[in-house]
Every structure is written in structure tokens, then in C-alpha cells.
Image (cartoon, rainbow, N blue to C red):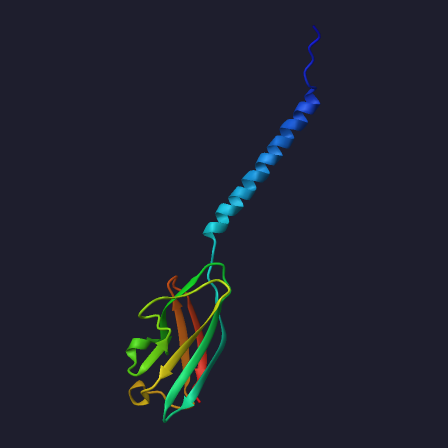
Length: 148
């Protein structure tokens, strides 16, 4: 009987090909796992403007878009460094203080802040107002607006 095996060169080529295929599979698997844990939020203010006047109060509209890869949860709105609850006669819609506002990746949300009671809120026409959106992850997104 004449038994012959595969040559050492062909055996080496097969082992190298199998090792490369396994390493590629492991690389794709690791990339998928890393992608699950590296999501981020990135909120961008698309537009922000105020309407109204000193006699009737103001309405501030802030349109934001989440350009990140995970949802952003707005849990507070600050005006001039103070939360909305610090001001009498100031409300927001949607109101993140009553329920966290979630913004999905790629979606847009508009926050409407109404300053109805100008006497107790100490706002006046021509005043610069800093609106800051605070998210549950601790990030803050400020925008400066001048009241008309």
C-alpha cells in the first residue's frame, strides 16, 4: 500500500486561510459589541427665536435635533442658569421637569417656553436670555436669545 498525505506547503496554506477567516469573524463580532456600547448623544440647536412683547409676555421657540447615535433625554431647562421652576409664570411645552423628553437619533423636537408673568420673572425687552437644555447624561446645550 502506498499512502501519501497532503504536502506540508498545502497544509500550511489551509491553516493560514482558516486562521485568517477566524480572525475576520472575530473582528466583525468585536466591532458589533463595541458599537453597542459606544453610542452617544449630540443635540444641536437648529433654530431659536423669541416672539411677543413686554406687555403681553414672550414665547421662546427652541428647535433641536439629535445628531448622535443614541437617544437624548432632556430632563431640565434652565433660563439664565436657573431652572424653570425658579420663575413664576414661566412654562415649557413639552415640560421636561414633569416627564423627561426623549429625542431619538435623527429626530427633531421643538421646545416652547412661555414667559407670561413679566413682573415676577424680571424679564424685559432687549434682554439677552440664555436657554440651556440639560440631558440625563449630564450634557448641557446652551443658546442665547434676545427678547424682542
